Length: 296
Ligand SMILES: Nc1ncnc2c1ncn2[C@@H]1O[C@H](COP(=O)(O)OP(=O)(O)OP(=O)(O)O)[C@@H](O)[C@H]1O
Ligand SMILES: [Mg+2]
Image (cartoon, protein in one colour):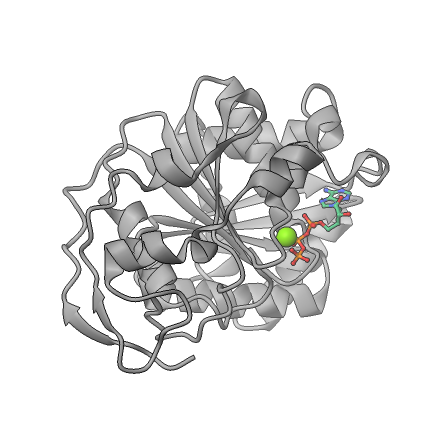
């Protein structure tokens, strides 16, 4: 999709607030949606106010969060709300080349109007089938989401978690602008680490300040070491933290919803630590591990 012309510069991000904005990225199938949903509900249960954003056109974050079929069917994604997107940005979803976008729309009602309540009080905002926009794409729906996220003033304990589709090519400047933190999810495989590193470099180039590595689906300590070995062999990266999440075979028996995993599971234990880290209630920032990998 071609980029639209920008007629109004977006307002710069409001003075840094105390909230947390995390984009979850990585290769297909590594566990992005599972971890996003687990984190969202875990944080919400601990009193955080959580907005989960589904920016994957497959739109499966809702079922992973545990929404029932009727609620899922009733969700109208942002990109399908053509009139609303046009009212806010001056262009309709899908309009690219030549469209004149207002990039500083009033976005205060986006969450109220378009989000759905998910279990544990998580709010879910679904983007719809557009996230494959090219790196520099400023298509209206992406611009609106980016503006909505960067314009939010979050207080301590308020969290935005965005699940993305696999790979890196969708991950453009507009979308990255609102995020302070990228969670790069990998499995202990070379291919997933390679994609993870590409995404980590892109996230850093786009100005995301904190980049965390999560090695998911670890069956043993060897898996974690294997993944970190791949990182080193591929040039290393100065991740701000490194976490590990165990492989949990129960996940496969209860999917798509993670609801049954929240109370007592291998996955829940790792996710609780990760939510501590993201909420700033964690003392172990893995500095030693970053040093081991070097600042690649
Ligand atoms: N720690 C884990 N242990 C066991 N299974 C897991 C774990 N994490 C994720 N899974 C399983 O792996 C599969 C893929 O997970 P998920 O859909 O979250 O990946 P994804 O990165 O979002 O994939 P996609 O790129 O297709 O959106 C699911 O069946 C999920 O239940
Ligand atoms: Mg997914």
